[in-house]
Image (tube, rainbow, N blue to C red):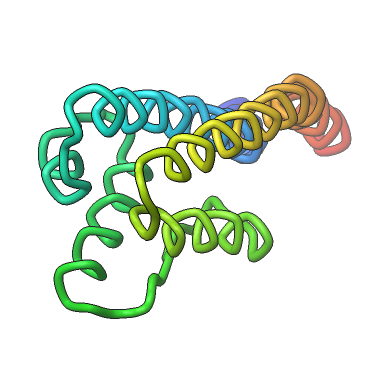
Length: 158
């Protein structure tokens, strides 16, 4: 019975460590997919001169956070509201980066829009590299610390 309880404690503490580590991986995947969206957006605007609403309707992604972000942005455009971002994985300064991007998107001519997209592709590429390094540093650390802490708790309880 004692081994079963220790096993459950070990599994739950390890699970918590993996969940903390996965938040960094989830944020990295979000930024990677957003960068892919920016490249798609740039190609659609430059070559096909497609409307932003049509681009938002046709873009498909499996990333649930990016889907929520694009649906919120599309809703805000259609209802003439201020852009509001409600993603739990983003901090306030990161939300402000996206609000600044979306509030300026589609408000200028084609040449200026192309330059704006180029600058933002570079900006979000840098952010993606930052998130990759944070994932490698902290994401893996939380997973390993979760397992080590679980071992420590189990040893103390024995």
